Amino acid sequence: VGRVSESLQERRAYLYSYADRYFELLPSGGHRQLPIAAGVVFTENGQRLRLGQGLWATATGAARTRAVTVLDGPAGQIAAWGMVTEAGQDAILGVRLKADDEGLIDEIDTFVVRFNDMASTFAGRGLLDAGRLASPAPGLLDLVDEAERPSAAELRRAADGYLDGVSGGDAGLIPVAADCPRIENGVQTVLRTDGSLPGREPNPATAMGVAQQVREGVTRHIAAARDRGMYLTDPSRGLIMVRFFFDHPGAVRGWPGRAPFAGPNSMPAWEVFKVRGGLIRHIEAIIAWFPYGYRWSAGSAGTEEP
Amino acid sequence: VITARGGGLTDLLGEYYAALAAGDPGRLPLAADVRFTENGQRIAIGTGLWATADGSAGTRAVAVSEEAYGPGGTAGSVAGWGMITEGGGGGGDGEDGGGGTDALLGVRLKTTGRAISEIETLVVRRAPFGRTTFPERLLEPSAAMAEILAPADRCPREDLIKAADGYLDGVSRDDADLIPAADDCVRIENGLQTVLNPGGEGFPETFVSSGGLGGLGLGVRAQIRTLAFRYIEDIRDRRFVAADTERGLVLVCCFFDHPGKVRGAGFDSPIAAPNSMLIWELFKVAGGLIRRIEAIGAAFPYGMRAGWRPTGSSPP
Image (cartoon, rainbow over all chains, first blue to last red):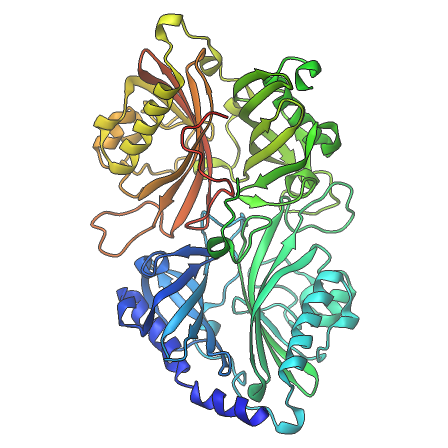
């Protein structure tokens, strides 16, 4: 079975070029030049749109390389994110493409992280290091030695363990190396040596590691890691991607903890974990701020019950 | 039976705000299968704003109800909006520094006569038009909206809807002729007057009207003629949720789609990134013309839906 998967992984390597092409064509709106299957399903930020709408109509530029890419050959899927500009403003675009047996794209899910966005539920300006996201995250695509290579099931356990641990406040669930960096929207949010996030107040939590932050209650404002899906795995590189929502109930009456938000919101995230020797070694994520309770499948599944 | 509790559906709306501020949905006569949404998301009663709200203004800025009397009591729909606070009851060192944060809350209730079967809420958490505070006006009832019309000025429900539909068609198609609005029709959006306001009262100096600096001074139809609203692609999923023929009121809940600064559009959209704005718009119609418009709204991801099936013009 392993050999079959590996050969499928190689045979589907053309999907890398699809991801490249998607970003290349975006600023000219040339979606018709993509190898698209009839009846392709397209979503942006959980809403089903016509291909050509949303960022396809507003993009003005795209970086030549992606910060993060995960290929799941056996599933015929690739996910990648990188920098784009929209009406001249920086934004992050995450794209997941699924190809059918004939190599035509039949599913496109996109996640556009916009800054100073009217539709954001975060009143401040979210952190972004566009420079860091303009080129591939170092080492992310390196092959993992067979001795340390996780199976697809182990990857899934690692990713879910992280999400369970962070949302449940239990560091013991998270198989993570002490020196594991986590990069969110290009900004490192753990193990910082400067004691604060760029442009923000000094915060000792930024110096902690992933597990320590959870142990110290830094993530207590997260109530759930919900609506998980879109798992893509690449065991040869020790990579798994998942999309989900962190629910932030806000400053709930009578709750003694620290709530960074007064009102509730849900934080959409696409997160990639690199796993080697049973431990998470590197985390990359893109995040935004949507209404509380938002779902990824809102557009396609339909919520308009009577 | 809800009528036994007091003065009908408008009182019920007040009870909702009071229960919310107390964080106690159990005070309300909720149907077992009550359907609840906050900002288009279907969530459990008790979560969302129910968990964070800690205060409510004593009165609503506007309210409209449409009642039908039956064996079960007063059935029908009521909706309105007013100010609340949230987040002051948590221990938080939140963005606001720990005190409560103001928000504008719209509530729509549908009752079967015995119990509340539908609750739709729209929480506007950002102060409007680049302001740092919500306008004071939202703390007081709008007397003009509440006024009862002389019988000669009234019209049937269908005509109220037709007038509101005409407005929405005119705004989305840039055609002032579709809009049956009086020249002196006032429009209040999230508490600020956005027409016939030449001095820009209430607007921060940083605000730039899409119709140019003079845009705020124009009337409803005159603004449309300047093509200032070309950036509105569509006004979709219109739901006429309550009409009051005595007062000439009709409330529509809908989405304004803003595709953003589209390449090659030929005009400059004041909204850069695509979004869809969920808007609740209340029209006062007298003698066949729209006399006053009050609306609330907030921006959401482009293409978002309200979580309620568009009802067209069917009664509650």
